[in-house]
Length: 183
Image 1: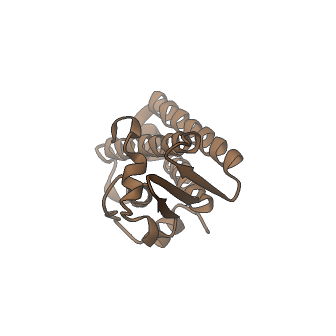
Image 2: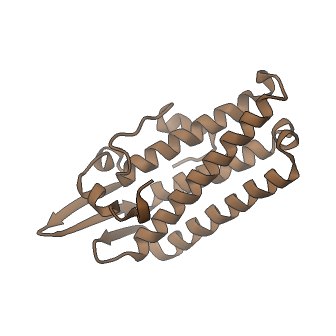
Image 3: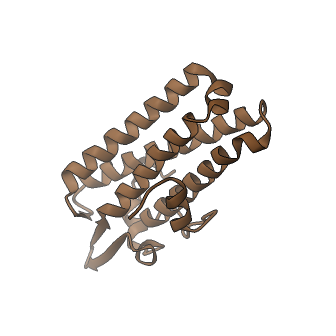
């Protein structure tokens, strides 16, 4: 990850995957870059993470394999993601504009991203732990949900310009459908 996301807007200005994913638009005037984010898309990415938690923790094999302390950590990560997402949505309205001089929404987006990355990492670890104890067919839905979440995370990072081009494991629509997010 980028240290303090200090280059967040610089990456956005580079115009990586932003326009092509339909999540935002970028305009520049002199030394000022303005980014307009599609709030519905940001919400969908966050909800996908929350739904992935619900899906994985509903699979008894996953919950029992990782144990109550790990389940609690995952639930806490989900609460952090929910809080970040709620804070952003309450402030953003239908769209949000970020400029180099305005950092409040930038930090809120960074928080959603960090929480989503944490959820993805924790859920990937949970499935890995469970797969060492249970046959693969029992965990097929869990693995699919984690793959869908990693797709969403990759696309979100692409939208934010953190990666030059997203490397989705599946199509965005398929990942959203698996995680029960409908735009």
